[in-house]
Length: 126
Image (cartoon, rainbow, N blue to C red; front, side, top):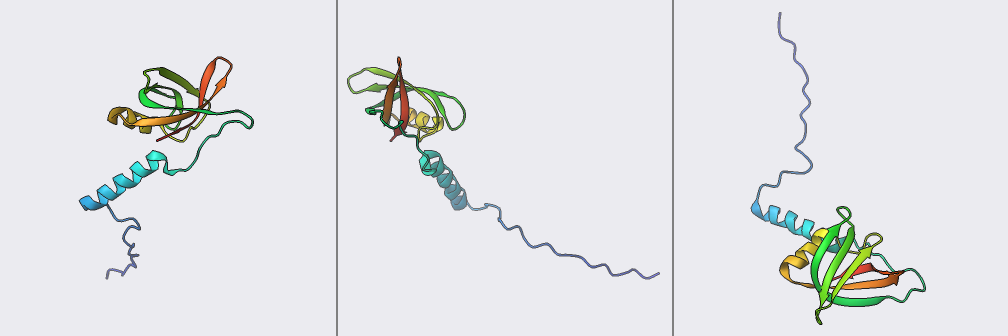
């Protein structure tokens, strides 16, 4: 008996080649950092008719609701006053991004409204 020839299908190389060089790793890391720093462009705004206020300060504490939303954040302004805010959704930055600001001592600007007896952050920016 002679062996029969079988047709083999040659698969092309993967569409996404493996990241092998260090420069590609750095590029990938920079892209992820840019996305984490607010590259998504989604922001929250105050309800219509509410007068928003702002305060600038250094992050003291960040409590995450989930990977993209902040449950509460505390900052200290230039006069030494501690401000604690809750949120009602995405505020423009992630908890991880605020922790970076806390680690590096960078200030943030919190736009907020007063609702009943609490301060609600509606947007947080660099």
